[in-house]
Length: 400
Ligand SMILES: Cc1cc2nc3c(=O)[nH]c(=O)nc-3n(C[C@H](O)[C@H](O)[C@H](O)COP(=O)(O)O)c2cc1C
Image (cartoon, rainbow, N blue to C red; front, side, top):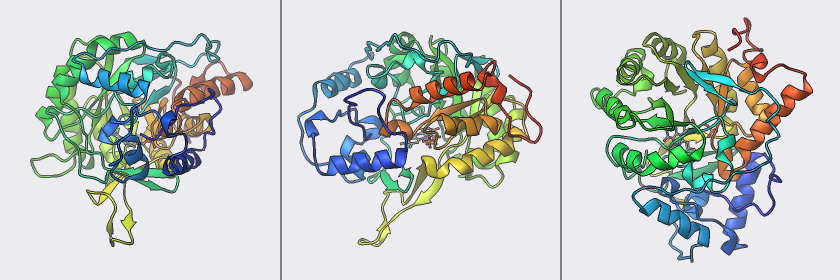
């Protein structure tokens, strides 16, 4: 996870692709190496691996913060002392939204799964209680080691990843983070992945009764071992897994659409009919890079998922189409780096947004999006941020 400790707060450029390049250059030239924070081990890659896509063989002395973080990783129960800031420029503005049926959040800005660890890693760096919610790392029934290297490749305006759902398994995640999540002061949405309908149900059941967990987000970009088809490609399969998860929990179930499906709108409709409380649009877009010297794909899995500003127009388009086909709330995701990007999604019909890849370049990005949305509401004399939801649709959505 490429990130360097900000020397001064709130002075980062929000152009994510430029920021990633800058970070890469700085890391490559090893400037201020002692200053880089090895948050790392998020998704199994070191800061250099995440930034360069090359295995990192060099030994470095971890910074005090890196040591602190690795202790958090190793202990049975994660311990967290969340940072709290007195300054909340958004406090005077009504930013509350229904991110899903039954999921009222104080603002529409969430972090995206797989880009914010388990939340606790960032809680000691930024005031996570200012976020609408966080979505944890993809969680499966059993521990998964993740995919072979390389797992990250840089692209213009984005990154390609093939992390492969590396995680310690649902029971271990629940045991380790239950207490810390309660102390974060921000709602947690558990991102659920699986290879059968039973897998999804089992993961959901592992988090029953954990205070702080407010909803589930089903990652249906996974192959169903029975037949090999991705859950998110097929309306019937997507509906089946949604209905099963709904039966298992009273908490809201949000289902995350894959843009790679032949007919995303048909899948979205089936998910709504199966009882979902909301949708996330979208997961990563399939892509590939080739190492021209080796004449082979760069990623160990050959193909990977593209994220970042490169996919934003695709994500906004899908949001716009799906918003006209369903009436449950939609959470937009894909290349959100600033408030202007978030507004595009909201006007296309999303009720909230997730910030993912942008957080790698600047952990403050989600908070800056919140501040920017508050400034927009103020500057335009709106009653609340809800006034812009669906504003660009041919038939505006009912305010939520
Ligand atoms: C490194 C990485 C890991 C991700 N892991 C997950 C995951 O475990 N589950 C999931 O549903 N989405 C995962 N995603 C997809 C993001 O949550 C998000 O949908 C996507 O990246 C688009 O948003 P962005 O452009 O703001 O990053 C991952 C994305 C990245 C870049």
